[in-house]
Length: 186
Ligand code: PRP
Image (cartoon, rainbow, N blue to C red; front, side, top):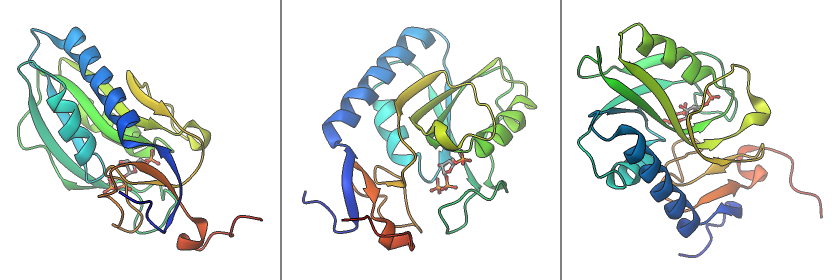
């Protein structure tokens, strides 16, 4: 696939992401064999990661999907978290693995981990594909981490800007001109 014209550069190509997701799946299988975990994923950005990660996990497990909103249509976290779709089944006594595409300020997961903890699971761990520590406002225990990335606006592999680009098969950096940022200097 050719590079999308709104993409400044490819940060993580398709093969690099696939290889790391396979490794994360193997780590989870090693840690969760015999425990029947539930993968709780946060839509919509995590959809692609979840779909690949679960197929890299050859063990009995289930999934549940939540949708929360934290960003609106901009590029900055508002710190406001709203639950748009809740869990479909109780998680009491279950081993929960929260599957996230990206942790940026950490505000979304900070809220979500408290929310899920109040439902008395046996355990909660966090598996995120992308960790962007530069802008962290809330400390988050990340148990399984795909990549640590710099403070750039990334899209693709489920991640959007204003609901677009989720279908790109790689993780790219969005050109600042697309979201009204300063153009790169020559
Ligand atoms: C993204 C991502 C996380 C959150 C992380 O979701 O999926 O849930 O932002 O940011 P934070 O650490 O600063 O809270 P977003 O609200 O963009 O929705 P989406 O998954 O539907 O794209």
